[in-house]
Length: 127
Image 1 (spheres, rainbow, N blue to C red):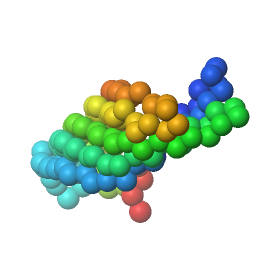
Image 2: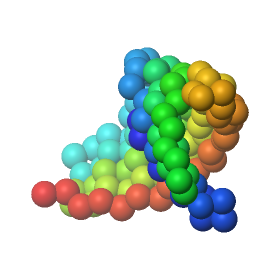
Image 3: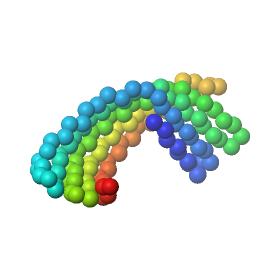
């Protein structure tokens, strides 16, 4: 997982890079299935945790901090497959947390916690 935060007011950039493990499940259930139409309901849940490196780019100094990040994600939706077109409606909730960093030159980065709620409508072509 990678993330870039650009805080223009404070003139600081953060690059957050995480490598770890993720476990999850995403079952699908066919609601309608014919030769021309396939309507599926899906849901999923995942949990991930990993080691995180945060590169802080300040004017006049650059620091690197180590910490851990975890994410809990829940999703659900519908997908309609027609002959040449796929339509989807998808909801995602994600709870993300980055722990207090290890000290670097007497400084630490605070914990970061944020939630994300998203609704997607997708259209795709099939070849």
